[in-house]
Length: 291
Image: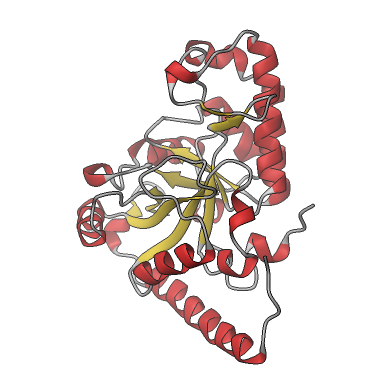
């Protein structure tokens, strides 16, 4: 979908890149005292928030009350994904970015399933601050999509077979897509949740962690789901992984990252261990090679 870039577009892109860099520096410089974690001086940034029917102004009010800086995401991908809003073209993406432009938030998308890049150009994706995705829309052997968080839709005959395919699926997403953040890693459908510790073997966890470290994809500490659990997080820290905080917040739940902060304290995370958006020209979609 990429088109040749004309000289005028190149100059405009350079100006936009410079503006984006200035905005990133300003966001960091303006980090309020309340947006630091007193235990470890950690930036309190929640990269996983949805506006849905909440206005951006209200979201910023809630965030200020919690002393949290926000990343805003919208679902993005093909129209097979069923959400109130699904960004499905460069034009959709540009309107979304324009809505957030100049606001004290990081601009992101929640990329859906495995074919989301078919509806966007690399140039459009590069205008975002970050791309977040998860493995919770799972592709079955017959190509059908299974929304793992919807208990009534999940049928699993062989637990071990599912876990192997689910682990492989997660690894392929991390290694094969231009992601910045892997959200809610190790989530299990309700039918398997009680067996979390047995099913998430060290070998399976390490496969996902190794892929994330190799591809420089941060692992979200998902406050809303209290995932991943400490065993996974300890392995990830030992492997040199980066982390981000995410509430999956909507409405008054925006910016609720208490679990993430508690895990960060237990792990002894430092600011250098946390994700920060790549500068213009260094986005995953610009620097990583994909088949």
